Image (cartoon, rainbow, N blue to C red):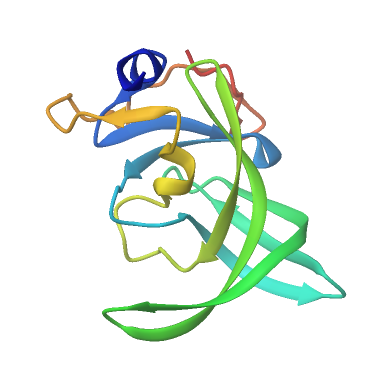
Amino acid sequence: MQFAQEEKKQVIGQTARVGIEEAALEFVARVDTGAASTSLHAESVLIQNGIVDFIAVNQDGARVPLRLPLAKTARVRNSGGTKERVYVEMTVQHEGRSKQVCVNLNDRSGLTYPLLLGRNWLEDEYLVDVSQAPAAPDDRRTASTHGTRSLSIQ
C-alpha cells in the first residue's frame, strides 16, 4: 500500500532548519533531491588512523571542532571535476525526528547553505514541496549557548 506509507512521511520545503547532534549546531539547510548524499561545510579536514578531525561551520559562523570515525571515502564527479570526498556518520535532527546519515565533508564556503540535505537523508521519511516558504536564516527557534545553538528544533 503506497498511500499508507506516504502518509507517515513529513512534508519539507526547499530549505529547512535542522540540527547536527554531534556538533550541537543549528543550520538552515538546502534540500536537494538531485544530490545523492548530504554535504556539510567543513574546514581543516584531517584523516589519521581512521579518524577524521574537522571543523563544522554553520551559516552564523559558529565553528565546532569534531573528531569522528571515517565512514568512507569516494570519488565524486561534479561540474568542477572529480574530487575525493571524506564521509562521516552524523545525526541530523528536524522537528523532533533524528536520522543518522553518511555526510560528506566539503568546502561549501562559497555557497549560500553550509549544509545540503541529500536523498540519503530524505529517503523513507520526507516528501519535498518546493512551494513551501523557505526557512528564514534569522528565524531563531532555539536559545544560544556558548556561541552554539541547542538542538530543540520544533
